[in-house]
Image 1 (cartoon, rainbow, N blue to C red):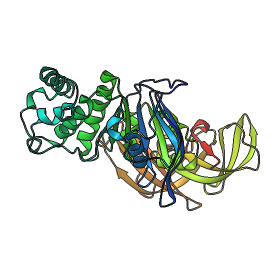
Image 2: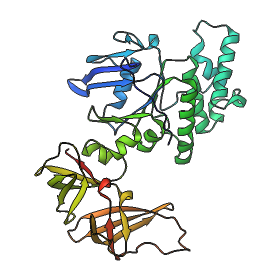
Image 3: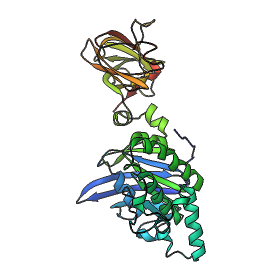
Image 4: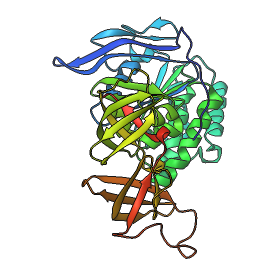
Length: 372
């Protein structure tokens, strides 16, 4: 995961100020406010219909906000058409011209720039060097792999040197391994150019790998903004906790708060200890969330007995680097556990097999308490 720290200034480079967009009276984006720093790689993350692409299209000028403002480098974009904005957009389909060579595709947007032919040629050369395609300028799109076409589209988007580059699901057409490789390429290119990137994606791993910060969207609103670590380890609501990665989530109630929180969780059949969360009070209902990889699975009861439950292996799956266990408790609740396979199966047996009785335990700091 690439984590490059970017401090958002008080006077943000890209400011989305209380923006709403409605279609036929139905809001697709609701009162969204975001401040994005110059040189930041920012991700809009959410499922289908959450409003992320509508927000991106408003940044590009393809849609007009019903209310609110968008400012880029201090300039209000209200009424500014797409071709006059200091913005370029890379589409999910790449939209390359099939009859043009790579060179001509990359240089297409420079035709109306105030540049000499030599300057245009030099800019195209620079862009192809940036995306490591210098030797393929004579080819046409059908002669390239999917990853190469993606890089041509990126080079073309960067050729006009926009202040903001918008990327709509930029890796959606690539296979898993190529997508993972290209994530780092995009991040490194963004770092080299210093251009502000705004990426729309539904892929959690993609957002967490690429972005300095992530805005998690749901039903037209932003639920949380933060780094990958913040939204994963410290979700601010049940939606974010459930959307980012895998998680076990149960209903609970606060019994007492005194340095740590004592939480009764009927589905687990135990009272847990959790790290104290500011503002929680005795008697309050909460959601109790625990990541599967934070849970230890053993054949014997852990010492101390704190935050430990007993169950039976209901199902398991082997993924190579780790194994997933589904443990059914006496209450009927099922808990998911990820266990890293540090040794080859030939060297050691699995931690547990189907129908084995096991103990699950976890630290109080691994328990996330949520009001929503």
